Length: 178
Image (cartoon, rainbow, N blue to C red; front, side, top):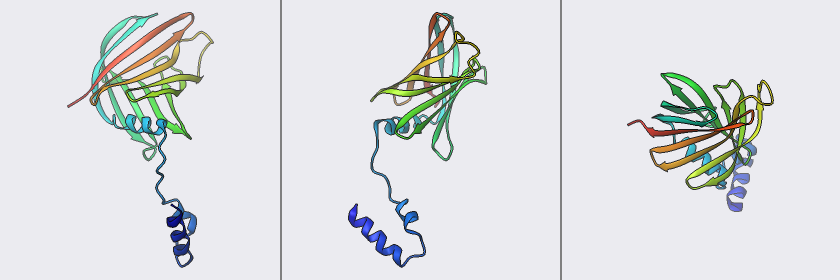
């Protein structure tokens, strides 16, 4: 790395390209667990189909589709959870320095923000940080999320939902559409 930097400095002296612009072109070789997890999430890009099951304070089952795509010049991954052809919830995953973060735009019409607190090879656990647009301290909201990679084209999302004095788990089982 030192030799490469010295060569760049010497090349810069006779170059029209500023040194700092050349330095910015040196690829980073450092990858954290969080950035590796984000890359794994970005590999979900595409169309998915599956089912959902709510248990706890509310119960329901049905079909759920999902669409994943990158935005922000690849710096964020958007997850649209779709019921009956209509996006009902959206989550955006992104890095914040060395932290992997997620903002969930919930059907409950609030926006919990979560941070990855456990990263394993086959699972990422997100924990509650704060929330916007919470109507009251007891209003229902997502309080955590576990993303589990079961196979290359199979994953589950387990949302932990908290409202009043009741908790629910919302399990979504998705498979990549072929």
